[in-house]
Length: 111
Image (cartoon, rainbow, N blue to C red):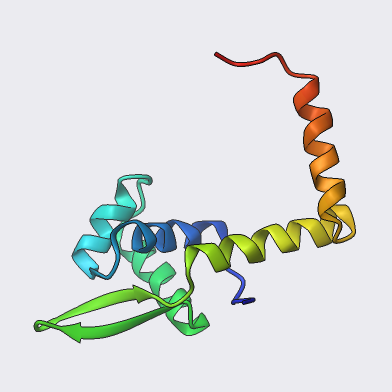
């Protein structure tokens, strides 16, 4: 599935929803802030963008608004990897694998 383009900043909000599942706005803010110093307004802006793109939906549950990811993490990763392949490797997974093998061969093993 190819979904909407999600920016790096927006992906932090998506990651919080993928980690913890549907969240209230307060819980979403707390979860996003674990990895960033963004304020409420920034997180709200990112959430609204994701909702307009159709990547997140909201539902009223138990008297509270909760936010749900519409796009799965797996679909997001597949789209990002596909875009990387297209942009840098002419859509060829074997070219990416060869690139990674060559780079890894030049590095010492980590412990």
